[in-house]
Image (cartoon, rainbow, N blue to C red; front, side, top):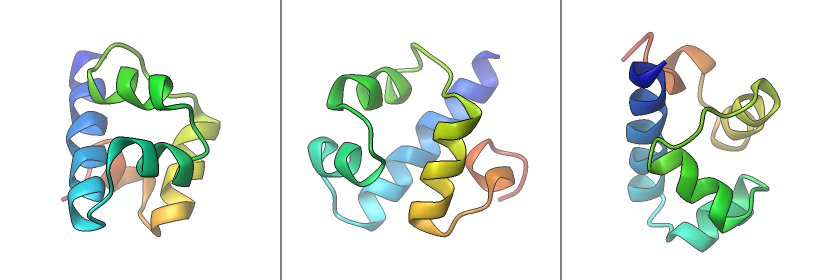
Length: 71
């Protein structure tokens, strides 16, 4: 579970950097609260499947990439 959280955190940070988004902008784009996004980035929680799908749809990313199964 920790590896999954770490992969998601790293990839969320990559998406933020690529889009030059701050945490508030990223949260809004993902339809999350800034606190919820912070918990994901800080590996304090694992996102629901619904949240994973929403993030992938918003950034045209695959679920496999977001969870770290594919580079």
